[in-house]
Image (cartoon, rainbow, N blue to C red; front, side, top):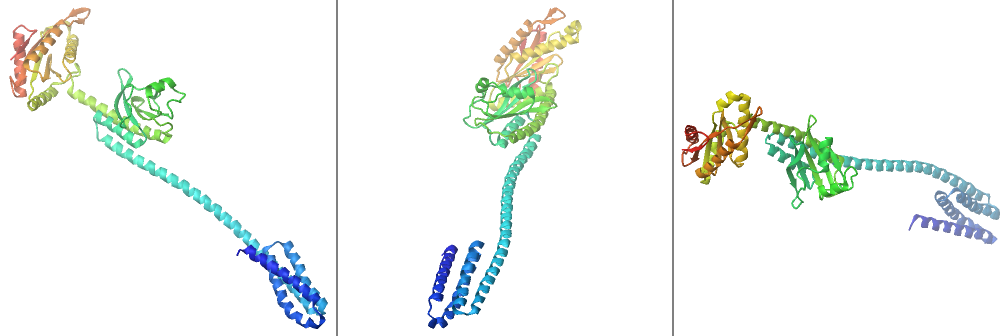
Length: 475
């Protein structure tokens, strides 16, 4: 049973008692008057309890109404029975009502304070809960950032341990692809300094992703190259900065794009780019992370380029661009070992420019340098890519022909001999030409060691000179 129901029952009972008491007072015969006080006293106590309930539960208006209503009982009893002590019950009722109302007011005031305090505590709790959620979100964000930056640390450490351009490029693309965690494709374009254009150097993508359409970059890559600034494109088909039709033609299924230049002292080495077919995928934080990776990558690429250049200077002749004698000897040993493993032939040409000293004396040493470069270019463009062309020293050149037997090598040597003789060199408005003498040896027909093979090739070349120059001679 609820509080309201109990209160209602008490009030109904009190009103019923009140009515019965009035009936008892005015309807009792004189002969039974002595029995009334025994009933009246406990009844008044019940009315006092009912008054207390009304006073505590309801407002002051109803309390005053009940107070005056219930006080009529002792007043009527005193008048009816000529017994003044019944009036003390009136005083008792008013005193009880006053005390109850006082304590109720006090309790209500304290209750209001407690309610205000509870409301304040509730608001504080809600505020703390919101703050806790915010802190949890921030903490989760910091965890992700920490995880990413730890990956960056590992990325930088791996890059610092590699100087090969191919390895550095593979690390840049692979780490960018995995650290960003959202990309479908990662592309690395390097700048061709001679042509000042981009060229795709390395890429990585999910299985089944369409191949890159353009190997020289699209409008987004060219924008990054020109502006030297990172770029974020939330939807390639809706970005007002770029032509919609051209973007759709060049980017295929890519919609979200982030890209950053690889800069060293305002010099662009390349562009790193991440693609996804999902629109609005990348955030400024993703772009910021890619920018940091691009900065680290630029330093690693610069070191790789420098290392490559150093190797080229150590292995290539600065005048002709062909390999130096030291590198030629290393490669000759390697190719002869491979020929043994694969049971294939290998031939060696020793080439010398005829009467080169006379040419130098006639036209000067600068003209001699031009001749050396011209013949080096003929060698480089005539023979296949797997051939090793080197400047042996002075005006002498060597060519290693892997997989060529002596007959094939003779045809290749004769072709160069004819091309050099037919090639015209213009000096000081004068048309000149030179010829070459070529010595030919083959492995394993003529020799089985690099030193012996080189010695026999040199001997065959001098035989060609003695036999009249401008010809091929084999041992």
